[in-house]
Image (cartoon, one colour):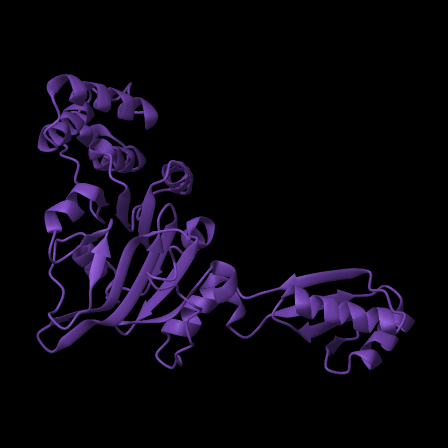
Length: 325
């Protein structure tokens, strides 16, 4: 089984009498994208700060391992294995893009020759070569974000924390950033992503956890999360009124729309349920002209799980460090 890049058990953090993280568990396999979703103030950035050694967890927290290293016993080893791109750009606008990169190379104690080579390669990789000699203050938002991630990669981290990396970017720049993230993961990098863009998590993440009230209220793949929220259904449309009537009798649980000759059957959209439904239709000798499956999207999941009246929905199975190996 795949090793875990990040494993945290009972992660807790409080500030005075305010509990931000109330014993959350995290298990992120190497070479995957894990997304932490949650409303403002849910604790997403706090989790990133703890896992990246910027903030200490509460003493009551369980063991935390990042990059195979114990967070408490070997923080320097953790720092050597990770890179962090925060919500706000770390780019210095008073110097050029190239100078920003060379500064990072110096901080990573690279030799002048090695640093120059790494910087040249990364500037080319992120399509910043032409702008390299210009002050970073003249860069667009998307260029600054690309430079920010390029700076993060100077130390060749195997785990990257991206805290809301596309906030404020236009749709084209956001899609460019998604492609960069995919390329990083295809190269074996693990990405821990926090975002408020549900489409972003849906597009990128192998697994998603929803953080609310200091706890993870649901976790799974995007498709698993969509299935745990009510509202999924199969829609059957007919052009023959007689076939429609026969189907309405055979599928008495369906909601009817006599005007459009459509039936709506509650369903979680799984292959098993679809197979059973088609079996019912075949058994009755009925053929629909159109069948469409509708499942809730991540917007529905997010609002259902983080509303003030939300009830906690059990998480999908998350492997422990032992059985994920």
